[in-house]
Image (tube, rainbow, N blue to C red; front, side, top):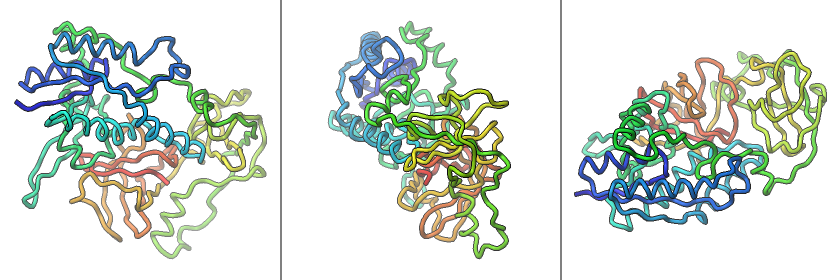
Length: 395
């Protein structure tokens, strides 16, 4: 009987995952990860981790499986929170959920589980893993979840072969409605519990309030850039190589305060991200304002009117060579090679098509159609059919 330690979060997905594992004959142990202590920054009046921990314990009792809580707040703070603050301070937009899976659930938690004699760890993610044999080697594939609306493969885009070899995703073949029905039929108290929102293990937060713990508010200008302002005047036909063309297309827009009209003030450029609409608190315009660029060194936010503002859209992105991650090392491309893929740059974004171009300094992704709100610091994940094969941090 194989031993599986499941991350019981106190939600319906991990509850049903534990139930299914037990029904499949595994020896199941529930482990609740306590990663956050400070409730002062959460929007909800409740104490999320305390409620979740209690629900997880009740589920374990109901299923008759051992249960314990492990405090990983120290590791979470150093690996996730510190990284987040550093990225925002430098004008980039990190994704703590992707990091949380790479650094906490499938690293620290995995090592604890293996130390307790587990063969596998399990989580309630909506994704699937399977194994193939290629060139006399076992290779693990990360496959999208069967429920297209809940597919969470993006959040696992930084996992490696070792981590996938130890992972089980019991509900990856189900849709959300099926999971809730299973919970109801088995009288699990989490059957109707709402899905958690906000930062991984922290809960729902007002991001500026959260960031103000370390990033001090400071007044700066909001500059409105007219949609007729032409950023790239260079004729692509005059460039010497494909690499030069891709470098130009993937470069961030660059504005100065003389390029537009000052329309207001903000409390700190690092509180904002490209594509953001809420939180500007500037009205009186025909269409909503969107952040099109931030300059943290000069503490200036540049905005454009309307969701079709040309500065919101990019035709390409770049991933530095040391930020490229291949889940499928056997499929990776090398210098001067290309690959047609599907991709996304945020959770729940529909998959788009693009071509990867590999050069010595890194990887360019050329989109088939321009994409809105491509932001440095975000993760981009790329797929072949329904398999996630690699990812990287956008420069």
